[in-house]
Length: 153
Image (cartoon, rainbow, N blue to C red):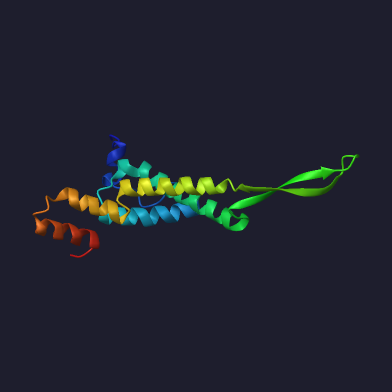
């Protein structure tokens, strides 16, 4: 028996179950995104890396957001003041520094936006798909495409 090439497994479609190494949060996003993509786009099995990246970036975004909620966008910095024996007797306020999680949060949002656009997960990217498939004169083709994306039969 010959083995199918990877792109042909599952009929060339994305798998419905998330990869085994995904966390619970990434798996939830995987199921939602794959369910949408299977009905609304031309994403196929070879695009699974993009979908995986999107799901894991979403988890990073959520984790960073939760950390920021708990610890704030900025963190106070203090310098220890010691007596002559080396014992810390107080702390003097030095200022604030940005919570490093804000950069991770920002980067993950940029990545989600970029990957989501490539997968057709944003309204703008879906509209660009419609514009690219018609020449502007064929209103019936546009209507057919709009019905396909809206789930109307």
